[in-house]
Length: 368
Image (cartoon, rainbow, N blue to C red; front, side, top):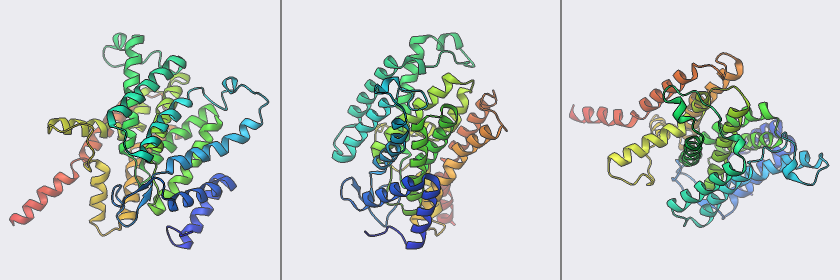
């Protein structure tokens, strides 16, 4: 097996994986190494910010296998046959929906022939069925600043939440790459979910995503792929709805944690429509692409610049609000989270001006 980086860093990653997940963490790391070498799900170099090597799209598959490995012992310790009657600390009842949404992405990872509109419609169908089967995770009452009575009408709430979930799945997909960005956002959500539900699945997901993030940041040779980005994004969305219904948390707290992919999706689609381009078109106009380019121009390698991009953006928009809530500095039921979310959107839009400012400075320099 050809290692994606030098032996000493490899040993360090293996040691950290062992601390995070024990023997299963090391096994998961080995699985990712094998997937890196496999031809299935290969992606050409430079598509996700790493120009030196091709990468694997199978990171989501590794995370799913890792989560399953951590869930099996918990399932075996319970003497029941019907998994639909499993206690809440094993499963929450909606996990099948993110898995199905992830399978849509897996089919595209392998074939790369499914049209965006077909993916979108299939996701929409899965989310609608999920809400019909598990209606208890739908918010019952949200304190909106305006038109609260109208917006809390059950039918309108269901339609709105369905659009938000499908939108976030697609928003998460644009944040996937070899920079750990989406994975670190997922770590924040799964940590909170496990703390408040004690679900074995959320624990398995947290550990698996943590090991993936280490390997992802250190090597740049594997990323989530559509299976991972769709599946994790859907799981994050359902988990946040779950936490919202079982706690007194502010909806704006979850909006703050998930703000980067959501704001970026709205910003990019708006820009594309204003330029008469398809909102489903792919490009490199995202804030994380711009920050990566800026960091690389300072002399950093592609790998370091890309990893730093993921750490900076996820740290600013997801890790920081999670820390503030967990530490009690700004409790998650505080009304101030709306102001925090609004400030985050302003910062995000400011970062989106990076490349524009560089162009202005370059034109000025050329004129001089």
